[in-house]
Image 1: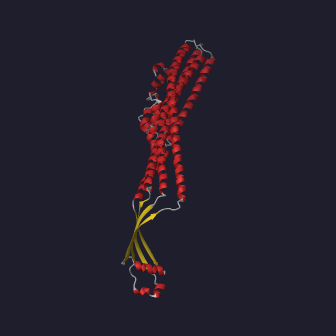
Image 2: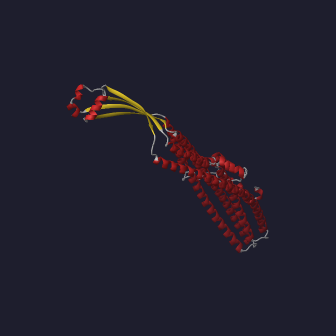
Image 3: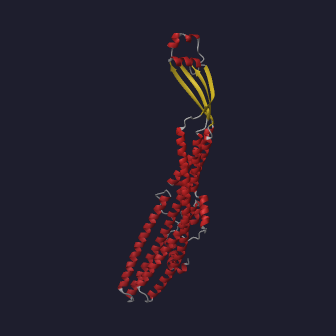
Length: 450
């Protein structure tokens, strides 16, 4: 944009250093994104889900390990069967214990039992292996979902940040237009006093100045709302306004629709999340099918029994192998049917998401092209409106144009400026939407939007 052909912005840029205090620190877009990803509740939820899936994947692998436990059991009683069994376990049984009175009415006895128990699933028709693979897929799905959430947060921060920049430009334009309206009123007053203009011209200039004040008030209110939206997007509702770099037009990289569609298929995190979720559901169906097969378990116990905690006693052990097959697996059939239906649903959802992604990318591509064309048109219109306003100012000063013509030209020039900066904002957002549709809107990629 050529500033020498745009007097309004030239004056704005020249006066800005004189009217505002020097700012030493600005909040960049990358800083806003990093802060949002660090404290936005949605990002925290996504991280928690990913951490839970990671723990579940580690837990699934523990099924391959043998189970070992230790128990210390302290008991006392005079039940005849209990007393008889405990004396045998303690290796304290004597001939006197065979007396009928001792068998029928034994004295209470205490027992301290220390026991180690172990078990290990030797074979379960590969159910554990399928569950482990399913847990790994769920872990990858949760990680991809967290990435999708982060990209959504980045897009929202970009939109809010760009809105603040656009609102700041609107305030700058409104402030300049108010100063211009005040200067015009002074000029009209001089013309009226000199007899070159009528009183109605002064009234029109006064109305124009009042309208420009209302525009400035509205622009400042929009800026405050934009800051509030940015704070909410960052997870910092009490965010205070800080200096930002002004919004500027950018020449963003160009790409074709087929390239963008291919990129989206490879990098969209939500599509990757659904793919891994579908794989996990397929493993769940396989695990349900494994339940119909045989299961082999090995087990063993070692126990020491004592009459007191410090006395000697007896110990014993037992070990074995158990083979089990479910002969009437009615419930397992229903479970398999349910898991199969869930797998089919996941496959259909994945296909639905793939179609939606194609639509998202196509829409973003069209919006990007439209935004670029709008920016070019708006820039040309702004330059023409500025030149027209310059000519009419000279003609009004020479008494060759009416104030109505001048005010209309001012309205057109002001509207062209707003349209131009709105087009700059739209161009940046269209490119951000395209990156989001492709699945490449990372914090690093977002830096190119500033």
